[in-house]
Length: 552
Image (cartoon, rainbow, N blue to C red; front, side, top):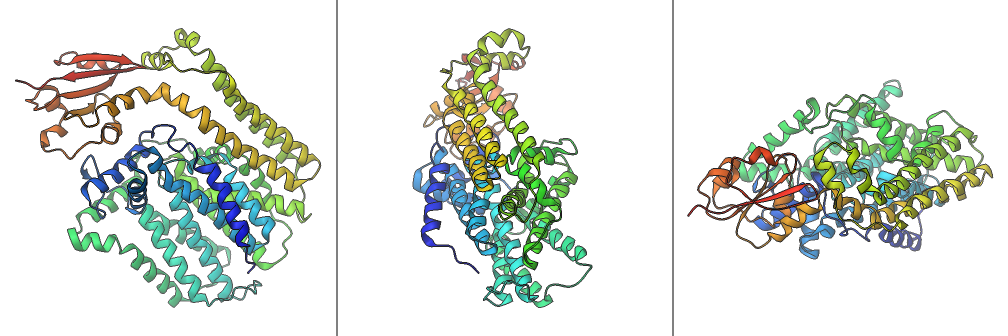
């Protein structure tokens, strides 16, 4: 296989770091997932227990520990803060772009490797998630690598025309198993489910011809099991099967109910991918159709990516809970197909379709208008308050946030990106067009993270989180009334409770409490708690802050 130059890899790593690391700690973590996961990692450190996950010092069996190990290590280095919570995914962003560059270079050439890395790093949600503190970026990378190495195994075993596969089939099978084990340790057995479904559909596509050795398949499963046993096995041997059993029950419930709180409509994930993976999503469309192939592996890898896309999107359309990041594994095939379109257009091996430029311009213009509208609305937000009938939203909008108008430059940059990209498309300068679209979109996200997101956050949760931060080091109870949030745990640096009654809201409100209790609620819900002996401290941005003194 073609070996990428180390100097190119290092340059790509530096560029990726410049895009993903700055401003990680500029804004508070967001409820629920970001704060939830960060709190699990904080408690991992606090309890010095790295095998069992806790949140609010109670067992949390919804996720395996891999990502929490990463976050807790980051917190050991950088402290318990937003930067540390998000840093593992910034690292994942750097690693992912390098992986895609290396894979693309080895599959085709250096140009394709750069295009694939550009498409992933320069699309909306793929880029944004590397600035987050959620699990999916690492899970997606491990799952993709498991499938990638299995494809290499298949090619080596079945004599595909990739003559530079210089390892034995067992080598690729073992690495596939290692990455599958890591994926399962990151988010659970859904990784193996998706993997096996893609293999099964490929088996059907190839008219039921066996393309793997059963002993190699067994070896793959053994390696996967050995990797996952570092947690599943150790936890069961140490503490018994209860925790693992609850984890598996939760995973099943997640697939069969609306347990995650979002039902969504039937085509939810296709809309999410179309908008969230812009602009790669639109440039990927032509590559879904038949084309002219230069080799057997050229056609085969494209088939694998298309199958991965359809398996992920159909599976999570069937699943009852529909959340944005559930279909995020599809970002790999979408960005591959986008890079494939540009690559084939440039080599004149696929006809350019004008509708792609038209649709990209339309959707890009809508995104630009939204970005410009955010600034325009923010500059006039207090004038809009009388037209909003939700009291909590009205109070949010009254927050004292300074907007200069320069924030609109983010939307203007999006406009420039679309114009420059379209001009290059019309000239059939496809590599320049790809660079304009993906680098431009990456810069838009970078600027939005720096100057828009921190200001928007002040309207939503900042007032409550600032109150929680003020309680750090104070011997007290802190909880929310009328809504759920993980922020009181993480942002107060909550200690392990010594009084089990403190978990009960009724005891905090009416019981014989032994230290002050602070409560945070919303302006549209505060009247529900008038019957309790609570002193109102103040109100800010839609939140009401209350206190109850110990009974003497």
